[in-house]
Image (cartoon, rainbow, N blue to C red; front, side, top):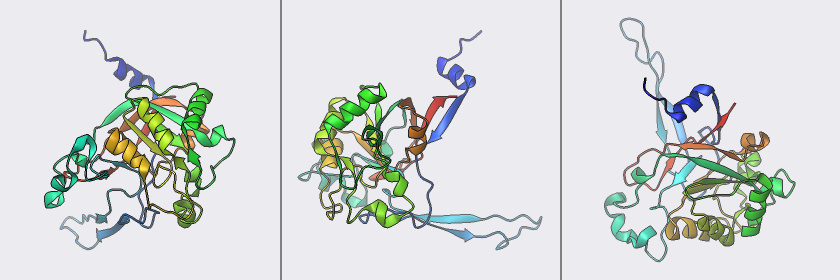
Length: 272
């Protein structure tokens, strides 16, 4: 008799999947730097009826790669003309698609996930706009949760800002700013040797009030310097409400050849 895989046995024993992403819908808020998501029916039932009475509908989808819940590929950001590992960005993007660090190289992830709930740390539902999450915040949140990020982990950071998602202008925070990781916090995460990180905001990192997306230094630290993937527009409310700080993280990006990112549907697998 063949020995059963322990992972299969775990699944047979019953796991619950917690959604960590947003449904994709026309008109959802997105960064002003990116084209928005649009979906419409290209064919409707009744447009073509087959001889047996059958009919089919289908849609057309137009979207940027960094709209809705998504993951950034390492081609997304350069610094002084260089991508991660010193790759020349101008050379890599010739021909309209990246020949290095394209989204087709984004890994599928089946990793330990850790939730660092910074809003809970500060005893609030939502951090104030423009709040900068530093290394001390991350350290204290890890201690509060009883977890410690380790090599290869996926670290998700909750600000509570996702509660504003249905109010587009408030969520994008052009005037108020948006809470998020600062440079010191990003360096703390990089020192833990994690694989990826994500947050429940539009840009992951802190946006200063009135500054918008004018500078994004945390993207430089994580993507260019450290090779750590970034996820944005997560919904971490259900995970936080359940008091879950450690889980199995699942993700399968689209393999978009030469792209700079991919829409995703992240999931947390937890025992029932």
